[in-house]
Image 1 (cartoon, rainbow, N blue to C red):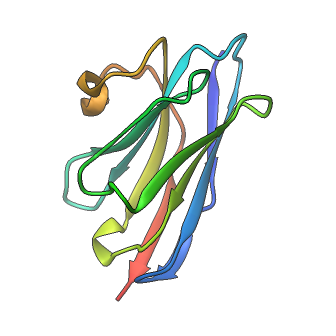
Image 2 (cartoon, one colour; image 1 turned 90 degrees about the vertical axis):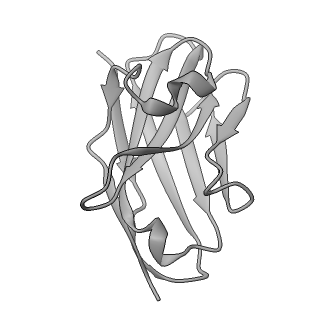
Length: 126
C-alpha cells in the first residue's frame, strides 16, 4: 500500500522561501511519477510540478517556473518542493501525489494520480 506524507508547510512572508517534503512508503522501486499540486480556497486544484523519482526529469507549471524546484532523494523515497520568491498568490494547501511510471504534461490535471497525501498548508503574507 502506497502512502504519502507531506510536511514543511507553514506561514512565510512574501519573498521568502519554504521547502515541502513528501515521504513515500510502500514503493518497491523508483519508477514513479511524483507530483505536487495545490488548491486555494474557492479555486480549482492546479499542478505545481512533476518529477520522476528514478530519472529526475521534471515539469513545472508556468506560474512557478524559475521560483520552485523539485528535488528527490531516492534512498529516502522523498521528494522535495523548494519554493523561493514566494508570493501571496502561492497561498494554498499543497498536496503530494504519485502514480506508477513516467511523468507527462498530460498529467497536470491530477486525475491520473491514484495516490495522494493529506496535504500541508502554505500561507504567504504580503
